[in-house]
Structures are given as structure tokens and as C-alpha cells.
Image (tube, rainbow, N blue to C red; front, side):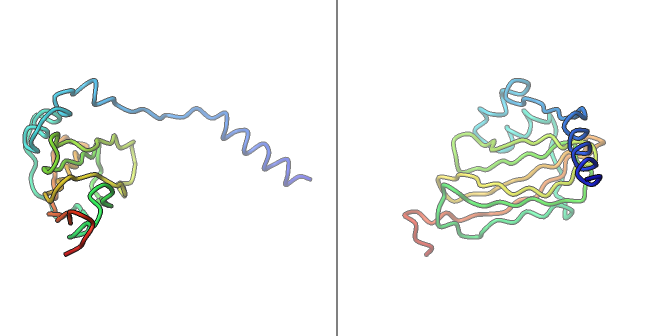
Length: 148
């Protein structure tokens, strides 16, 4: 009986605890990012600076994607990040997604992106000091669902 009370009170405390979840609506604050037709313009519109290539970011995606409508992309880094952005150069608009990383958050994201043709995926990680780090990977999209 004591264990049930303890668990019940613990769950109630967690439910009532204030959460510090906040997100920036980049579509409202940086609208030019979402209409940029090339990666460099999108990065400039979002961050106002150019990134430097970094080996501290792991970008994992298939070299050949049989389905351009759902390409799995995984991003990992130990950089203490403030934000993470994904861009690609195959579609008319280059921006794919921008994530705000909470204080102490771990960057280990897996998403599926859509690319209409073969191209390059670029990931930008903004660290706590505002410095931009990047990683890139070419992805070949097999048109018609054939991987050859």
C-alpha cells in the first residue's frame, strides 16, 4: 500500500511540475529561410553567417535512397548546441527543419526528409557561443524506386 501511495504521489508531482519547454517559431522569425532556393542563402537568412566544416558532427544517411519521399537522416554531435538546422539542395526550397536544443539537450536526432532528386544534405549546428559547425553528405535518389 505504501508503494502505491509513493508512486501515485510521484506521478502527481511530475504531472504538476512546471515544464520549461520553449521553442522558437523560425517560420515567423526568419521567413526568408523558408523561401531560399539554395543552401547558402538559407543558412545566411537563418544565421547571418557562414559555417565551418566540423568532424564533431555525425551525419548518417543512405548513399543511395530508393524512396526520395522518405530518406532517413540521423544527426549526432557532442557539441553543446543551441540549434540544429537541416538543408538540402535538391528541392526548390532548401530548408528542411530547424530545431531549438534545450539547455543540456543531447543532439541525437533521426528524421525522414524528402528529396525530389539526388543532391547534398547539409546540417548546421549552432553552438552556445553562436559559432556555426557543418557537415554534408551526398545522397543519390534512385528515381522510379530502383536502386541502380
